Image (cartoon, rainbow, N blue to C red; front, side):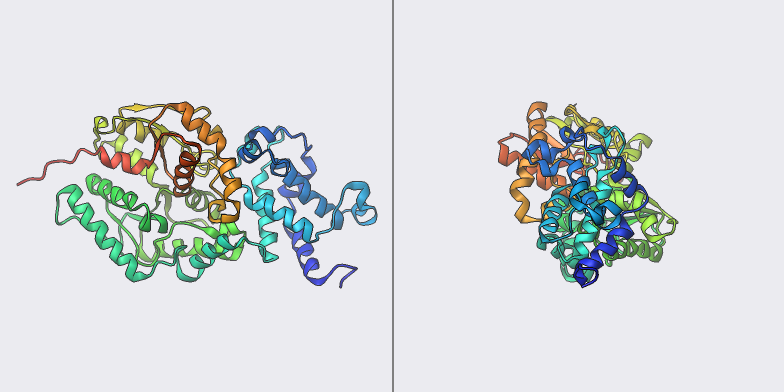
Length: 434
Protein backbone atom coordinates (compact mmCIF):
# COMPACT_ATOMS: atom_id res chain seq x y z
CA UNK A 1 0.00 0.00 0.00
CA UNK A 2 1.16 3.52 -0.84
CA UNK A 3 -0.78 6.33 0.90
CA UNK A 4 -3.72 4.00 1.30
CA UNK A 5 -3.67 2.91 -2.36
CA UNK A 6 -2.69 -0.63 -3.38
CA UNK A 7 0.44 -0.99 -5.48
CA UNK A 8 -1.28 -1.99 -8.75
CA UNK A 9 -3.70 0.93 -8.54
CA UNK A 10 -0.85 3.26 -7.64
CA UNK A 11 0.93 2.31 -10.86
CA UNK A 12 -2.19 3.12 -12.88
CA UNK A 13 -2.58 6.42 -11.04
CA UNK A 14 0.98 7.35 -11.94
CA UNK A 15 0.34 6.46 -15.58
CA UNK A 16 -2.79 8.61 -15.45
CA UNK A 17 -0.70 11.63 -14.48
CA UNK A 18 1.68 10.93 -17.35
CA UNK A 19 -1.06 10.62 -19.96
CA UNK A 20 -3.54 13.27 -18.89
CA UNK A 21 -1.55 16.30 -19.92
CA UNK A 22 -1.46 18.92 -22.64
CA UNK A 23 -4.53 18.82 -24.90
CA UNK A 24 -6.14 16.00 -22.90
CA UNK A 25 -5.96 17.91 -19.62
CA UNK A 26 -7.22 21.05 -21.36
CA UNK A 27 -10.14 19.15 -22.88
CA UNK A 28 -11.17 17.81 -19.48
CA UNK A 29 -11.12 21.34 -18.11
CA UNK A 30 -13.00 22.81 -21.08
CA UNK A 31 -15.73 20.16 -21.46
CA UNK A 32 -18.95 21.76 -20.16
CA UNK A 33 -20.84 18.43 -20.13
CA UNK A 34 -23.49 20.21 -22.18
CA UNK A 35 -24.43 16.97 -23.96
CA UNK A 36 -24.54 18.53 -27.43
CA UNK A 37 -22.35 15.64 -28.55
CA UNK A 38 -25.04 13.10 -27.57
CA UNK A 39 -27.13 13.32 -30.73
CA UNK A 40 -24.02 13.04 -32.90
CA UNK A 41 -22.99 9.70 -31.38
CA UNK A 42 -24.32 6.56 -33.08
CA UNK A 43 -23.75 4.59 -29.88
CA UNK A 44 -26.02 6.82 -27.82
CA UNK A 45 -28.59 7.28 -30.59
CA UNK A 46 -28.71 3.54 -31.29
CA UNK A 47 -28.66 2.27 -27.70
CA UNK A 48 -29.97 5.11 -25.54
CA UNK A 49 -27.19 4.31 -23.04
CA UNK A 50 -26.20 7.55 -21.31
CA UNK A 51 -22.79 6.06 -20.52
CA UNK A 52 -22.09 6.29 -24.25
CA UNK A 53 -22.63 10.03 -24.50
CA UNK A 54 -19.11 11.21 -25.39
CA UNK A 55 -19.04 13.80 -22.60
CA UNK A 56 -19.87 11.04 -20.10
CA UNK A 57 -16.59 9.32 -20.99
CA UNK A 58 -14.72 12.57 -20.45
CA UNK A 59 -16.51 13.13 -17.16
CA UNK A 60 -15.60 9.67 -15.85
CA UNK A 61 -11.95 10.17 -16.73
CA UNK A 62 -12.06 13.61 -15.10
CA UNK A 63 -13.55 12.21 -11.88
CA UNK A 64 -10.66 9.79 -11.47
CA UNK A 65 -8.09 12.42 -12.38
CA UNK A 66 -9.55 14.87 -9.85
CA UNK A 67 -9.34 12.27 -7.10
CA UNK A 68 -5.57 12.00 -7.30
CA UNK A 69 -4.35 15.24 -8.87
CA UNK A 70 -6.43 18.09 -7.44
CA UNK A 71 -6.37 19.39 -3.88
CA UNK A 72 -10.13 19.27 -3.42
CA UNK A 73 -10.30 15.81 -4.98
CA UNK A 74 -7.78 14.54 -2.45
CA UNK A 75 -9.31 16.29 0.59
CA UNK A 76 -13.05 16.27 -0.18
CA UNK A 77 -13.68 13.96 -3.15
CA UNK A 78 -17.47 13.88 -2.79
CA UNK A 79 -17.62 17.66 -2.92
CA UNK A 80 -16.14 17.73 -6.46
CA UNK A 81 -17.45 14.37 -7.67
CA UNK A 82 -14.03 12.73 -7.60
CA UNK A 83 -13.85 8.93 -7.62
CA UNK A 84 -11.32 6.29 -6.65
CA UNK A 85 -9.89 4.13 -9.42
CA UNK A 86 -11.50 0.94 -8.16
CA UNK A 87 -12.78 -2.20 -9.88
CA UNK A 88 -16.25 -0.76 -10.42
CA UNK A 89 -14.87 2.33 -12.08
CA UNK A 90 -12.50 0.23 -14.21
CA UNK A 91 -15.47 -1.89 -15.35
CA UNK A 92 -17.35 1.24 -16.38
CA UNK A 93 -14.35 2.69 -18.18
CA UNK A 94 -13.85 -0.58 -20.02
CA UNK A 95 -17.42 -0.57 -21.38
CA UNK A 96 -17.20 3.09 -22.29
CA UNK A 97 -13.83 2.93 -24.00
CA UNK A 98 -14.00 -0.33 -25.93
CA UNK A 99 -17.57 0.14 -27.17
CA UNK A 100 -16.60 3.53 -28.65
CA UNK A 101 -15.53 3.23 -32.30
CA UNK A 102 -13.18 6.27 -32.18
CA UNK A 103 -15.09 7.71 -35.14
CA UNK A 104 -14.68 11.36 -34.03
CA UNK A 105 -18.15 12.36 -35.27
CA UNK A 106 -18.76 13.98 -31.88
CA UNK A 107 -15.80 16.31 -32.44
CA UNK A 108 -17.59 17.85 -35.45
CA UNK A 109 -20.48 18.97 -33.28
CA UNK A 110 -18.67 19.89 -30.05
CA UNK A 111 -18.80 23.71 -29.64
CA UNK A 112 -15.31 23.56 -28.11
CA UNK A 113 -13.82 21.18 -30.68
CA UNK A 114 -12.99 18.57 -28.04
CA UNK A 115 -11.54 15.36 -29.47
CA UNK A 116 -13.24 12.70 -27.37
CA UNK A 117 -11.47 9.91 -29.26
CA UNK A 118 -8.12 11.07 -27.87
CA UNK A 119 -9.51 10.77 -24.36
CA UNK A 120 -10.82 7.31 -25.15
CA UNK A 121 -7.34 6.38 -26.41
CA UNK A 122 -5.94 7.45 -23.03
CA UNK A 123 -8.53 5.32 -21.22
CA UNK A 124 -7.74 2.32 -23.42
CA UNK A 125 -4.03 2.66 -22.75
CA UNK A 126 -4.70 2.65 -19.00
CA UNK A 127 -6.98 -0.37 -19.32
CA UNK A 128 -4.34 -2.16 -21.38
CA UNK A 129 -1.81 -1.56 -18.60
CA UNK A 130 -4.38 -2.93 -16.15
CA UNK A 131 -4.74 -6.11 -18.24
CA UNK A 132 -8.29 -5.23 -19.25
CA UNK A 133 -8.20 -5.47 -23.04
CA UNK A 134 -11.26 -7.55 -24.13
CA UNK A 135 -10.20 -11.11 -25.00
CA UNK A 136 -11.17 -11.10 -28.68
CA UNK A 137 -9.37 -7.84 -29.34
CA UNK A 138 -6.32 -9.00 -27.42
CA UNK A 139 -6.21 -12.21 -29.45
CA UNK A 140 -6.10 -10.29 -32.74
CA UNK A 141 -3.49 -7.91 -31.36
CA UNK A 142 -1.25 -10.69 -30.05
CA UNK A 143 -1.58 -12.67 -33.28
CA UNK A 144 -0.37 -9.66 -35.24
CA UNK A 145 2.43 -8.92 -32.81
CA UNK A 146 3.67 -12.50 -32.56
CA UNK A 147 3.01 -13.93 -36.04
CA UNK A 148 2.89 -10.79 -38.19
CA UNK A 149 -0.82 -10.86 -38.99
CA UNK A 150 -4.11 -10.83 -37.08
CA UNK A 151 -5.31 -14.23 -38.36
CA UNK A 152 -1.96 -15.99 -37.83
CA UNK A 153 -1.82 -16.94 -41.51
CA UNK A 154 1.28 -19.04 -42.15
CA UNK A 155 3.77 -18.36 -44.94
CA UNK A 156 2.58 -21.53 -46.69
CA UNK A 157 -1.05 -20.46 -46.51
CA UNK A 158 -0.18 -17.05 -47.86
CA UNK A 159 1.74 -18.47 -50.81
CA UNK A 160 -1.10 -20.88 -51.60
CA UNK A 161 -3.55 -17.99 -51.66
CA UNK A 162 -1.28 -15.83 -53.83
CA UNK A 163 -0.94 -18.67 -56.31
CA UNK A 164 -4.73 -18.83 -56.56
CA UNK A 165 -5.00 -15.03 -56.81
CA UNK A 166 -2.56 -15.11 -59.72
CA UNK A 167 -4.59 -17.76 -61.53
CA UNK A 168 -7.72 -15.66 -61.08
CA UNK A 169 -5.88 -12.59 -62.37
CA UNK A 170 -4.70 -14.40 -65.48
CA UNK A 171 -8.25 -15.52 -66.23
CA UNK A 172 -9.61 -12.03 -65.62
CA UNK A 173 -7.16 -10.29 -67.97
CA UNK A 174 -6.81 -13.21 -70.42
CA UNK A 175 -3.03 -13.26 -70.09
CA UNK A 176 -1.15 -16.31 -68.86
CA UNK A 177 1.90 -14.13 -68.24
CA UNK A 178 0.17 -11.83 -65.77
CA UNK A 179 1.71 -12.12 -62.32
CA UNK A 180 1.37 -10.93 -58.77
CA UNK A 181 4.94 -9.81 -58.09
CA UNK A 182 6.40 -10.66 -54.69
CA UNK A 183 9.33 -8.96 -52.91
CA UNK A 184 10.27 -7.01 -56.03
CA UNK A 185 12.99 -4.57 -55.06
CA UNK A 186 12.71 -1.06 -56.46
CA UNK A 187 9.02 -1.34 -57.38
CA UNK A 188 7.24 2.00 -57.22
CA UNK A 189 4.32 0.67 -55.17
CA UNK A 190 4.24 -1.76 -52.26
CA UNK A 191 0.63 -2.95 -51.96
CA UNK A 192 -0.29 -4.23 -48.49
CA UNK A 193 -3.64 -6.02 -48.07
CA UNK A 194 -5.29 -7.26 -44.88
CA UNK A 195 -5.56 -10.82 -43.56
CA UNK A 196 -9.34 -10.79 -43.89
CA UNK A 197 -8.95 -9.93 -47.57
CA UNK A 198 -6.56 -12.81 -48.00
CA UNK A 199 -9.01 -15.25 -46.43
CA UNK A 200 -12.55 -13.83 -46.76
CA UNK A 201 -12.59 -10.93 -49.24
CA UNK A 202 -10.04 -12.14 -51.84
CA UNK A 203 -11.77 -10.24 -54.63
CA UNK A 204 -10.23 -7.02 -53.27
CA UNK A 205 -6.70 -8.30 -53.93
CA UNK A 206 -7.58 -9.84 -57.29
CA UNK A 207 -9.38 -6.64 -58.36
CA UNK A 208 -6.44 -4.49 -57.26
CA UNK A 209 -4.05 -6.69 -59.27
CA UNK A 210 -6.33 -6.40 -62.30
CA UNK A 211 -6.34 -2.61 -62.00
CA UNK A 212 -2.55 -2.48 -61.60
CA UNK A 213 -2.25 -4.65 -64.71
CA UNK A 214 -4.50 -2.31 -66.71
CA UNK A 215 -2.65 0.77 -65.48
CA UNK A 216 0.78 -0.71 -66.17
CA UNK A 217 1.78 -0.10 -62.56
CA UNK A 218 5.19 -1.09 -61.22
CA UNK A 219 4.11 -2.81 -58.02
CA UNK A 220 4.79 -5.63 -55.61
CA UNK A 221 3.48 -7.40 -52.54
CA UNK A 222 5.62 -8.58 -49.65
CA UNK A 223 5.95 -12.12 -48.34
CA UNK A 224 7.06 -10.69 -45.00
CA UNK A 225 4.45 -8.02 -44.41
CA UNK A 226 0.97 -8.75 -45.75
CA UNK A 227 -1.07 -7.20 -42.94
CA UNK A 228 -1.89 -3.51 -43.16
CA UNK A 229 -3.89 -3.49 -39.92
CA UNK A 230 -2.74 -2.16 -36.57
CA UNK A 231 -4.73 -3.69 -33.72
CA UNK A 232 -2.33 -2.19 -31.19
CA UNK A 233 -4.08 1.08 -31.98
CA UNK A 234 -7.38 -0.48 -30.94
CA UNK A 235 -6.18 -2.35 -27.85
CA UNK A 236 -4.34 0.64 -26.41
CA UNK A 237 -1.00 -1.20 -26.24
CA UNK A 238 1.37 1.47 -27.47
CA UNK A 239 4.45 -0.73 -27.74
CA UNK A 240 2.64 -3.16 -30.03
CA UNK A 241 1.06 -0.31 -31.99
CA UNK A 242 4.45 1.26 -32.67
CA UNK A 243 6.04 -2.07 -33.59
CA UNK A 244 3.31 -2.83 -36.15
CA UNK A 245 3.90 0.56 -37.76
CA UNK A 246 7.66 0.13 -37.74
CA UNK A 247 7.42 -3.21 -39.53
CA UNK A 248 5.78 -1.56 -42.53
CA UNK A 249 8.40 1.20 -42.50
CA UNK A 250 11.18 -1.40 -42.42
CA UNK A 251 9.66 -3.30 -45.32
CA UNK A 252 9.37 -0.15 -47.41
CA UNK A 253 13.05 0.50 -46.78
CA UNK A 254 14.01 -3.11 -47.54
CA UNK A 255 12.24 -3.12 -50.89
CA UNK A 256 12.99 0.51 -51.74
CA UNK A 257 9.40 1.33 -52.74
CA UNK A 258 8.19 4.89 -53.21
CA UNK A 259 4.53 4.46 -52.25
CA UNK A 260 3.11 2.46 -49.35
CA UNK A 261 -0.29 1.55 -50.78
CA UNK A 262 -2.77 0.34 -48.19
CA UNK A 263 -5.76 -1.70 -49.21
CA UNK A 264 -9.41 -1.14 -48.33
CA UNK A 265 -8.82 -0.64 -44.60
CA UNK A 266 -9.71 2.61 -42.90
CA UNK A 267 -7.63 2.61 -39.73
CA UNK A 268 -4.44 1.37 -41.42
CA UNK A 269 -4.54 4.42 -43.70
CA UNK A 270 -5.21 6.91 -40.92
CA UNK A 271 -2.59 5.44 -38.61
CA UNK A 272 0.21 5.30 -41.21
CA UNK A 273 -0.70 8.54 -42.97
CA UNK A 274 -1.34 10.80 -40.00
CA UNK A 275 -0.17 9.22 -36.76
CA UNK A 276 2.74 6.80 -37.18
CA UNK A 277 5.37 9.45 -37.90
CA UNK A 278 4.54 10.99 -34.52
CA UNK A 279 4.51 7.62 -32.76
CA UNK A 280 7.88 6.65 -34.24
CA UNK A 281 9.40 10.11 -34.00
CA UNK A 282 10.60 10.44 -37.58
CA UNK A 283 9.29 11.43 -41.03
CA UNK A 284 8.84 8.73 -43.66
CA UNK A 285 10.90 8.83 -46.87
CA UNK A 286 7.91 7.54 -48.86
CA UNK A 287 4.28 8.38 -49.62
CA UNK A 288 1.34 6.71 -47.93
CA UNK A 289 -1.79 6.21 -50.03
CA UNK A 290 -5.03 4.28 -49.93
CA UNK A 291 -6.08 2.09 -52.85
CA UNK A 292 -9.11 4.26 -53.72
CA UNK A 293 -6.85 7.29 -53.82
CA UNK A 294 -4.55 5.69 -56.39
CA UNK A 295 -7.45 4.31 -58.45
CA UNK A 296 -8.98 7.79 -58.68
CA UNK A 297 -5.63 9.06 -59.97
CA UNK A 298 -5.55 6.33 -62.62
CA UNK A 299 -9.03 7.34 -63.78
CA UNK A 300 -8.32 11.08 -63.87
CA UNK A 301 -5.01 10.54 -65.67
CA UNK A 302 -6.54 8.18 -68.20
CA UNK A 303 -4.33 5.27 -67.15
CA UNK A 304 -7.40 3.05 -66.89
CA UNK A 305 -10.74 3.21 -68.70
CA UNK A 306 -14.04 2.01 -67.33
CA UNK A 307 -17.48 1.21 -68.73
CA UNK A 308 -20.17 2.24 -66.19
CA UNK A 309 -22.85 0.27 -68.04
CA UNK A 310 -21.38 -2.87 -66.47
CA UNK A 311 -22.56 -1.74 -63.02
CA UNK A 312 -26.23 -0.98 -63.64
CA UNK A 313 -27.56 -1.17 -60.08
CA UNK A 314 -28.09 1.97 -58.01
CA UNK A 315 -25.00 2.39 -55.82
CA UNK A 316 -24.43 4.43 -52.68
CA UNK A 317 -21.26 4.92 -50.65
CA UNK A 318 -20.62 4.45 -46.96
CA UNK A 319 -17.79 6.68 -45.76
CA UNK A 320 -15.40 4.80 -43.47
CA UNK A 321 -14.69 7.20 -40.62
CA UNK A 322 -10.92 6.75 -40.83
CA UNK A 323 -10.86 7.47 -44.56
CA UNK A 324 -13.33 10.33 -44.74
CA UNK A 325 -13.85 12.24 -41.50
CA UNK A 326 -10.38 11.47 -40.13
CA UNK A 327 -8.47 10.86 -43.34
CA UNK A 328 -9.83 13.47 -45.77
CA UNK A 329 -10.55 11.00 -48.60
CA UNK A 330 -13.97 12.31 -49.55
CA UNK A 331 -13.90 12.93 -53.30
CA UNK A 332 -11.64 10.07 -54.39
CA UNK A 333 -13.97 7.11 -53.70
CA UNK A 334 -16.87 9.04 -55.18
CA UNK A 335 -14.88 9.80 -58.32
CA UNK A 336 -14.25 6.05 -58.66
CA UNK A 337 -17.91 5.12 -58.21
CA UNK A 338 -19.29 7.87 -60.43
CA UNK A 339 -16.95 6.75 -63.21
CA UNK A 340 -17.57 3.03 -62.81
CA UNK A 341 -21.32 2.91 -62.05
CA UNK A 342 -24.36 4.01 -64.06
CA UNK A 343 -26.21 5.44 -61.07
CA UNK A 344 -24.80 6.81 -57.83
CA UNK A 345 -26.74 8.33 -54.94
CA UNK A 346 -25.57 9.78 -51.64
CA UNK A 347 -26.80 8.79 -48.22
CA UNK A 348 -27.89 11.63 -45.96
CA UNK A 349 -25.80 12.79 -44.18
CA UNK A 350 -22.63 11.77 -45.98
CA UNK A 351 -18.98 12.68 -46.25
CA UNK A 352 -17.40 14.04 -43.09
CA UNK A 353 -20.79 14.04 -41.35
CA UNK A 354 -21.69 10.45 -42.26
CA UNK A 355 -22.90 8.16 -39.50
CA UNK A 356 -20.34 5.62 -38.30
CA UNK A 357 -21.39 2.07 -39.15
CA UNK A 358 -20.66 0.98 -35.57
CA UNK A 359 -18.05 -1.65 -36.37
CA UNK A 360 -14.82 0.33 -36.12
CA UNK A 361 -12.34 0.88 -33.33
CA UNK A 362 -11.84 -2.86 -32.90
CA UNK A 363 -15.43 -3.31 -31.64
CA UNK A 364 -16.22 -5.91 -34.28
CA UNK A 365 -13.52 -8.15 -32.76
CA UNK A 366 -15.23 -8.18 -29.33
CA UNK A 367 -18.06 -10.79 -29.35
CA UNK A 368 -19.51 -9.74 -25.98
CA UNK A 369 -20.35 -6.36 -27.50
CA UNK A 370 -22.22 -7.77 -30.53
CA UNK A 371 -25.67 -6.69 -29.34
CA UNK A 372 -24.48 -3.18 -28.54
CA UNK A 373 -22.65 -3.01 -31.89
CA UNK A 374 -25.76 -3.94 -33.87
CA UNK A 375 -27.93 -1.51 -31.93
CA UNK A 376 -25.36 1.23 -32.48
CA UNK A 377 -25.53 0.52 -36.22
CA UNK A 378 -29.22 1.34 -36.51
CA UNK A 379 -28.66 4.95 -37.74
CA UNK A 380 -26.51 3.54 -40.55
CA UNK A 381 -29.04 0.79 -41.36
CA UNK A 382 -31.75 3.46 -41.60
CA UNK A 383 -29.53 5.45 -43.96
CA UNK A 384 -28.97 2.47 -46.22
CA UNK A 385 -32.68 1.76 -46.45
CA UNK A 386 -33.65 5.39 -47.03
CA UNK A 387 -31.10 5.81 -49.84
CA UNK A 388 -33.03 3.38 -52.04
CA UNK A 389 -29.72 1.95 -53.24
CA UNK A 390 -29.30 -1.65 -54.29
CA UNK A 391 -25.56 -1.73 -53.57
CA UNK A 392 -23.71 -0.16 -50.66
CA UNK A 393 -20.05 0.31 -51.56
CA UNK A 394 -17.34 1.05 -49.06
CA UNK A 395 -13.56 0.84 -48.73
CA UNK A 396 -12.93 -0.79 -45.36
CA UNK A 397 -13.06 -4.42 -44.20
CA UNK A 398 -14.53 -3.64 -40.78
CA UNK A 399 -17.21 -1.53 -42.42
CA UNK A 400 -18.03 -4.32 -44.88
CA UNK A 401 -18.43 -6.88 -42.12
CA UNK A 402 -20.62 -4.54 -40.11
CA UNK A 403 -22.75 -3.40 -43.07
CA UNK A 404 -23.37 -7.01 -44.11
CA UNK A 405 -24.55 -7.81 -40.57
CA UNK A 406 -26.65 -4.65 -40.34
CA UNK A 407 -28.40 -5.38 -43.64
CA UNK A 408 -29.31 -8.86 -42.41
CA UNK A 409 -30.21 -7.78 -38.87
CA UNK A 410 -32.46 -4.89 -39.93
CA UNK A 411 -33.79 -6.46 -43.13
CA UNK A 412 -32.29 -3.95 -45.54
CA UNK A 413 -32.39 -5.29 -49.09
CA UNK A 414 -28.90 -4.31 -50.27
CA UNK A 415 -25.68 -6.02 -51.21
CA UNK A 416 -22.39 -4.75 -49.82
CA UNK A 417 -19.28 -4.44 -51.96
CA UNK A 418 -15.97 -2.67 -52.35
CA UNK A 419 -15.01 0.32 -54.45
CA UNK A 420 -12.04 -1.57 -55.86
CA UNK A 421 -14.24 -4.46 -57.01
CA UNK A 422 -16.74 -2.19 -58.76
CA UNK A 423 -13.97 -0.39 -60.66
CA UNK A 424 -12.31 -3.69 -61.62
CA UNK A 425 -15.62 -5.07 -62.88
CA UNK A 426 -16.01 -2.02 -65.14
CA UNK A 427 -12.47 -2.05 -66.56
CA UNK A 428 -12.08 -1.81 -70.30
CA UNK A 429 -9.09 -3.96 -71.12
CA UNK A 430 -7.00 -3.07 -74.15
CA UNK A 431 -6.92 -5.75 -76.80
CA UNK A 432 -3.68 -7.71 -76.83
CA UNK A 433 -1.60 -7.58 -79.96
CA UNK A 434 -1.48 -10.86 -81.86
